[in-house]
Amino acid sequence: MTPDIKICGLTTPEAIDLAVARGATHVGFIFFEKSPRHIDPLTAGSLADRVRGQAKIVAVTVDADNEQLEEIIAFLKPDILQLHGRETAQRVLDVKAMFGLPVMKAFSIRTAEDLRQIESYDGLADRMLFDAKAPAGSDLPGGNGVAFDWTIMAALDDGVEYMLSGGLTKDNVAQALSMTRAPGIDISSGVESTPGVKDSAKMNAFFDAVDEWRRSRAQE
Image 1 (cartoon, rainbow, N blue to C red):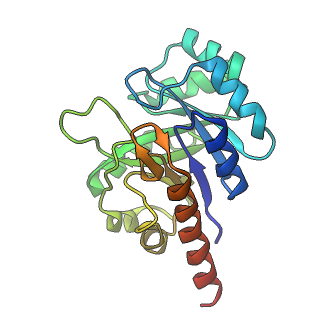
Image 2: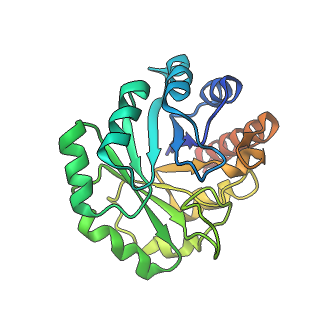
């Protein structure tokens, strides 16, 4: 199995070039002003053009209204819209119908019971993203550098198309992949030196860890 790899919260040419050179299948841009990874649509579009066609371009929004989505789409021309807020199943359906783009819906997870949230989105969202619930006091729905208990993923139906997110680093990504068999992984803060600043050494170390896991799996 070769999981998709999404590097999220990209803001510089150097970071996006490195992500794609190392094998990222998805690159994410965050449009949420409270995030240290927030970027404006014009700048994001310029960065995306560097790798367009080499990786899927993902626009990450949090409860964005139609006007915001229109502006983001006009400049970024994303392949996927990631809805990382409290968007309802109907909102997912409406966004897909209005903009004609695939939607990845993010869910905050702490316990096995939280996985039941996805039932009403089944068949509507093109992909799920499971992120750890934010710590108390955090204004960010994601990018907090915390993980949830991956053992609860055993209760998930095998056919669910998803990305695993939350607290991934070079030190635990192999364990996460082995435990969950996730078809995709998403990382942001785990490859940063400070919030919002991607670190090339940490990015390379993360991809090295994934490559090593792939090699070990091939030998089994």
